[in-house]
Length: 363
Ligand code: B12
Image (tube, rainbow, N blue to C red):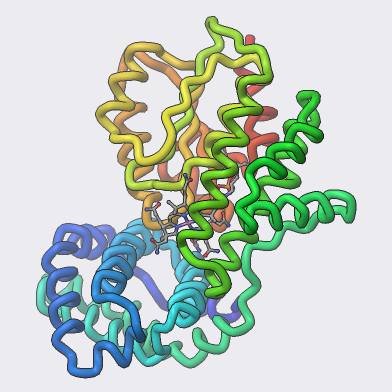
């Protein structure tokens, strides 16, 4: 992995002009790739028993992810994410052969729709990815998923909570939560040492094809209900310490941001938590209205980093508001330094760290 990262960073260079050309032609390329791939007589051999829609979704995620890779030179992230993509799609019935064919089709799309010089530059990356196909297959087999190292006592509690989620046993999961959330510190531990690692494991089980999307949704819904119960327990302060926490546009993961929002609120902040996929313009209106001291933006999927950047630029452009922006979520945990490139003021790897960082703005 390290060797590949070094090689990718050294060899793959994309200028701003080529990255912009790629982004501007994204829809034409996407339509082309969808159409070419679905016309293939062997398409269902390549994508297994899945629907064409699942392949189209993958292509949309691909183009959005590559926009981020080219714009911010995220070649390290590319090397880290590709084996994961191979692994999770292969575990959901896609053939490994699908990937080089798909990449070759993207290469053709780039050649067809981009100006010659940009196409040449961008296609160096696609050629490199095709060349490294076997290596990526190998890496995808040894990829370790999202594992949180925990002390034994927390590991036991997390396992118990996880099994209740998997059995869809809301009542027992709520009882467990009630037992471990009697104080501020306990609530923090419950979220960071039980809920978060349990959800990461739910994701691993889905990635490995061991549970269905429905079971993953059920588990998430139970966690949402439990969080609502815990939220009612702690006193809320209204006042000058205003904060907004939201997931970026197109970001459907909201529980991480919600934990950040709740821990901030327990720490005395007056938090407006907006949840998933918040449209930029609506967020801007709220920022102008309440003028928060801090704004937290959550991004899980690397393909949404660019959306977060656009949002941050809009917020920083408001003359009447001087909010500090802190970002977090799995996308940044994979490559923390990117937060500076997109104009954020701070990054925190988890909710506890987020509370500590922004506490300097409490006075
Ligand atoms: C539940 C879930 C969903 C739900 C989300 C529902 C909801 N209401 O939130 C739904 C079904 C919508 C979903 C969709 C998808 N998901 Co999903 N999902 C998950 C899952 C299982 C749990 C997410 C979660 O809540 N984690 C727990 C929270 C507490 O952890 P956290 O987000 O990291 O948050 C902490 C820190 O990161 C930080 N933090 C988070 N936000 C912020 C914000 C600020 C300001 C700060 C300072 C800090 C901070 O503090 C938090 C608390 O400590 C994860 C597994 C995982 N590893 O997380 C997969 C996972 C994230 N999903 C994944 C994928 C692939 C997808 C989809 C692309 C699936 C698909 N094929 O459609 C879509 C993408 C949709 C989109 N456009 O966003 C992958 C991502 C892989 C990758 N390498 O990037 C994961 C990792 C699963 C896996 N193992 O493969 N998903």
